[in-house]
Image 1 (cartoon, one colour):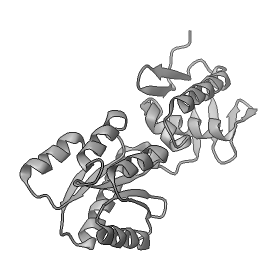
Image 2 (cartoon, helix red, strand yellow; image 1 turned 180 degrees about the vertical axis):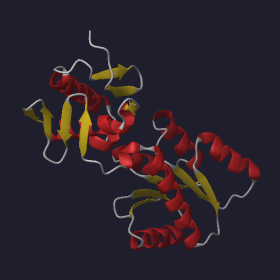
Image 3 (cartoon, helix red, strand yellow; image 1 turned 60 degrees about the vertical axis):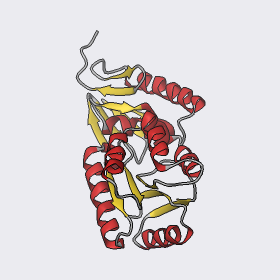
Length: 234
């Protein structure tokens, strides 16, 4: 579980510290924030595999954080930790896009099981959790570890960014790759300048792949890209 990063936003200093230490002992890399603004800034600065948000937080409440995140990120799972138990609050959380909701007081064992269930479920749905490193598509073989793209005996040495981006595209082959997700996973930030940088690397990958006209990287305007391996040659 050491590869999973959790964002924990909890303003109760005692509970926050206890949860932080417990989850760290269980092998998770946990970042603890004390208010909603700090938590949102942390989310924007690096990728996380799961967010754990209290609802009643200083500066920005958990619902507001989740709403802002869901405007650009529909992938990262969110769990609410809260003392609220009213049905309306639970419904509101799920409407925003929460994956789970646990009411205080709760046992550490139950929280851990819920976290494991979410990560297992999202891992099945989201290809980026795969550890696959070698890919065959069209006339190409791509070796991620060696950063090599092979095609009919010819090989191209890729840069680190080209390799990371091509791997994500291969993991989502013939499926949409969300722009924001790719930026956070590779550049750690989905800022305007990083988005322009990614466009440059997409153009470089297209040049590498143009020798096989059945392989294309399609731009999905406003959302991301798709690596297509059954494209019709022009």
